[in-house]
Length: 337
Ligand code: NAP
Image 1 (cartoon, rainbow, N blue to C red):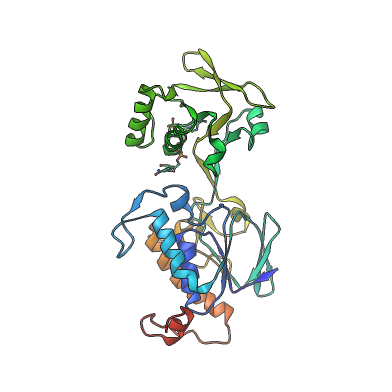
Image 2: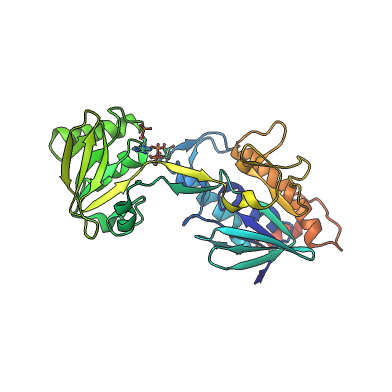
């Protein structure tokens, strides 16, 4: 069991800034995230898309924002646990104890839930054979593109993920892009590059059709697709990449007895505490009158929640508000002379 001052659930921008706000108050935190990388929605959903409403940063991508936040919290040497889904929470005297799916346990007087829209899970192909081949020839994400070199790949979906990977992997593999409609919802400029490749015979596009069957359940060799008019076609395939979008799930947090409304956690806007003392929620996952789902709102929310976390972690100390410009204590904590 690891003891700390605050357990932060979610390694998106709001969770990362919570580390900063706690750190300058002298509090230790751990961050836990279900995803395999830091950055939350802004890395998972729109890593390259510009964000224009971070104060004093006219334009940055989700990736740049995450990098800068990590730089900002570097002095606090916070441990970030990835690929860990928080499953259970229980109270032990003054502390909350959380347990992850990998049986890791953390204990702290406060929890800040900065879980965005919940955990993301890919929508999968609903064929039994696809389930058996998952991780072998059927994938819903590209973690290491070298794995997909020199293969015959059938990519499913009409969104940005399908288009981006069709374009990228076509550099070294034979790609068939398959979508249920003739229209693609992904970026037009990517689609026009893909159309150019199709014209040059370097990639095939099949629409409007869906997967009908996988033709061998032990070692994938080909798949059969069915067009809307009922015709079928067999395509030689070593690998299937399915990009059918992500399903957002609040997951086990929904079972913790917190007051919820429309899949968000109700908080008060004085300190962003939920109906359970010591459990706070901030960012897109929380709701209160007037809530705006902006990254900057999440920053404000964790700043206020961190004050209450201080009071819970240091009940015998008086909280003193200090400016980062003038506080020697904060400068020391940030490693500044
Ligand atoms: P997405 O945009 O939700 O697209 C999912 C695609 O799968 C859609 O084309 C949808 O078809 C199709 N689909 C869904 N269920 C299906 C089913 N049961 N059978 C057949 N087809 C099905 O998902 P995504 O491409 O993974 O992107 C998720 C989010 O991340 C989006 O907001 C996207 O813009 C963002 N993203 C951005 C970038 C980037 O900025 N470069 C890269 C990747 C992802 P319909 O079109 O017919 O609904």
